[in-house]
Length: 438
Image 1 (cartoon, helix red, strand yellow):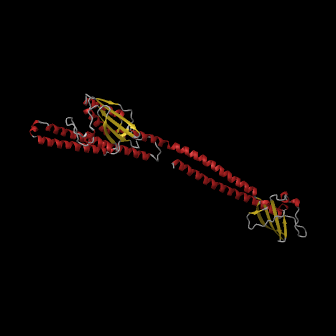
Image 2 (cartoon, one colour; image 1 turned 45 degrees about the vertical axis):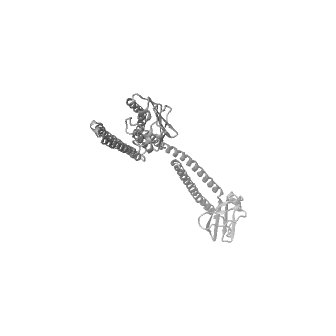
Image 3 (cartoon, one colour; image 1 turned 60 degrees about the vertical axis):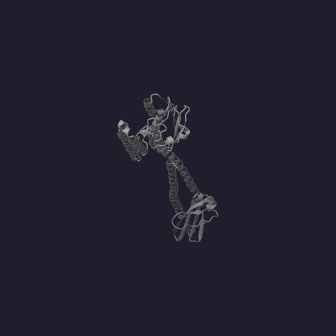
């Protein structure tokens, strides 16, 4: 469930509960005020009835002409009952044959009346001369009850409309408040594509510490990766010089008198080459996540490599038939290591043409390197994948190229395949799965 939906449901439930309580509270308050007001009217009616005339024989006489007209109209909604000395019982004509019992206490109470009326009744005690009056007055409260019920429904309806309106207003406010997060999401996508190195969107104060910490971590990771790459490059350059010197020393004529010693030293030197390449490659693969700036960009990174190879293999035409590709989520140096080794091998064996084709198909990145050379027999293709294996000792190299390529490819969960090219020579296909987060 989304955060917006949770807030909408929370606001809707809160408003409905508040309006429910407000409806009941308002109706209860109105009911209390009206009862208090009508009780005063009932008390005034009882006091006026207590002033009924008494004759010389101490008899109470009721003159209908002195009574309110509603007291003489049957079931009019206004009633009274007078008990005199607990012996004389008088009541208004409006009650007809309905009996109305006195109310205990000094507060008005609801009584059942004629014609399913709900009566608000009040009873008072009075004395006149030697007579004791118990006067009960009542009026129809059903109309008030219906109006209060109608008021309660109106408040509920108004509360529902207000709740829906507030939900829409809140949703709009939330959407406006989350707009910086949408911009932040786009910046994160650009960060992933290598188009930026930090997040710059102004965000709310509650999220600002998160963005600042993320920028700090990105900067720290970038520094660590750069130091690792610089260390690898420095180590590689530092070792290449003494190794080259040792190879030069082995080629001196003085050592021709000791062929066994030369072969032994050359074997040890080749071992050193393999160990150095292995450890440098392992260090590069262990650097972890690739920063945005160091990602492989085929459209701009491959052309300098091809230019360099054309200078090395002047008799070979290197052509690139790859389709335009976006930045890819792999380290630039690792992908150039793969392409450099494969294209260099193609240049060594090609008669005059080497071709590169790169594409992305169904979540997989494909690299195809072909040449028009002699190719590799089917029964010997598995051998050349091993480190140090060379099928032709006349070609310069240490037999490390395909071994390094295979290590990088397997590290990224990919596959490498040797086949026949339609150019007549070898076709090397490298397939790498594109990460889901790419």
